[in-house]
Amino acid sequence: MKKFFLTCVAMTTLTFALMAQSDKTNPIITAMPSLTIAPDAAAAGMGDIGVATNPDMNSQHWNAAKYAFIEDRGGVIASYTPWLRSLVGDIDLAYVTGFYRFDELQAISASFTYFSMGKVELIDNTGNMFQEAHPNEWALDFAYSRKLHEYVSMAATLRFLYSDLNNGANSSVSNKGTELYPAWTMAADISLYYRQPIEIGLGTSYFGLGMNLSNLGGKMTYDKGDHQNFIPANLRIGASYELPFDQYNRLLFSVEGNKMLVPANGGSTYAKDDNGDLLTGQPYQDWFSSLSSPNGWWQSFNDAPNGIKEEFDEIQWGAGVEYSYDRKFFGRVGYSHENKFKGNRRYFTIGAGFKLSIVRLDVSYCIATASTNPLNNTMRFTLGFDLYGIKDLVNN
Image (cartoon, rainbow, N blue to C red; front, side, top):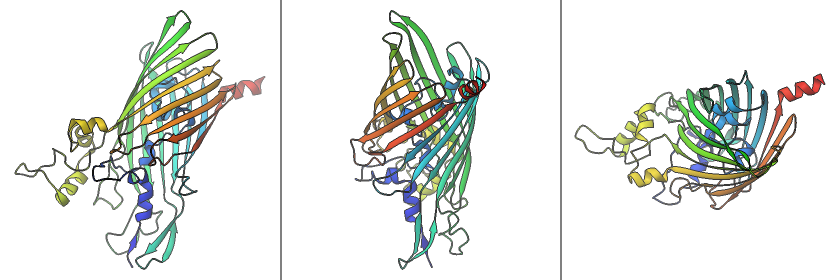
């Protein structure tokens, strides 16, 4: 009895599949696209950006190097993001991260990301359900950050990735070609952060730059080697400027762009046979599957079918503004733009938050300008605790 898991696989790539509206559409497809979802409500409220914004508890996902500049000694924070709420009610992303700053120069941090794809009903070729599966993906990472200079810090992150698309439902069937197995790999991030205070008439402003090379690692396979899938390696670069108005009121402006370091599917100028002719069809797919991760990162800058214009189309842009009062109350607004042929995720975001001595709470809301965004009309929540604030409260 032939089994198929189209529904399960589609959930993993639904962010991209929803955008396939014309023959010109050519989004970047990867394993574990859940790694690209902004996990925290603070960054989500600014248009899903965070590589160069002020250091906070959520820095692990965006730029772990920011922890070297954070004022708190240690903290832990948890976030919840419902997914595709307009279609289903049991898909969501949970995220927990924590950090500890040893001294003025160095810090360690870790995070755990869990993406549940809900319940999937598996059916046979007669249309009858024979089993339920609960596919899921998760990632666990650790980072070390350190100041290299008064204004510069760097961080290295090691990450373990695991993806189970069928939850063990058909890994033992005998009909070759229908088996799906859990996939895993290792990856690393390398990040840099620059933060310089600038004295102006209104007080101390801050200029920031950030860069994060994330998910640099091996490929994943769900069929024990026949097909190799790239993970979402990414280059993210951004800048920020925080402007004070007086002792209490401040505005933070930030912009950034990010590009997937994954080869474009189809038309690669590198895919040639022994005669120098471009590969097509199955030979191209075999070549694409056998391409190593480092070669894929390099070729992602110069392999789009339509040349340099399409390479620029692959960059997703974001901009956001954050207002803070006494660094305790926050209001945020942002916008994210993705080319219509590369995913067409275009949306405004708004958010708010407050930070007391031991507790931080952030919320955000997404307003899509293109119907393809799976987070349209979705509210996200993040709750954090200052561990040393709790310790001081108990001691007092």
